[in-house]
Length: 167
Image (tube, rainbow, N blue to C red):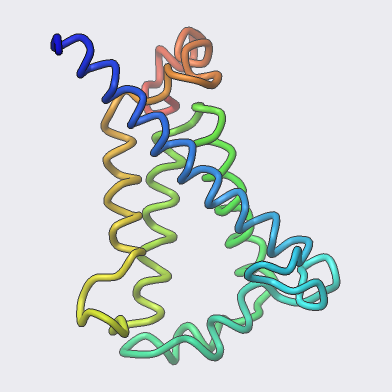
């Protein structure tokens, strides 16, 4: 197989990683907003007035930061920031725009969730949130936005060329 063929496969793989991670965040937002019955039941949806952070931060928090997380559980500002982060990361990755900001935002969110549950149940240090954070940071460092989405168009905009952090 030629090197070009391997490069094309790698572009496809990077794009699939970007899209699947984007959909993971977007789905979490939609499910918590409407309570579609997957991770969030209809009676616990944000649209019914139930906090999307209360249950997790109150009952799942453990370790050295548990008291901090339990203190902010259910705070309306925390709920808005959390849901906005899920939506922004999901949309940015799915569309291929603002991927740098979205990737770093998602990495921060994943590390915050990881610190809320220290120490992980199945491994004393690492769980899937750390892996997600690393992959999100990797996505910000690769040119993954030009495949499938609006990234190619986005990167041609003058202000995005001027301020590369907007890519």
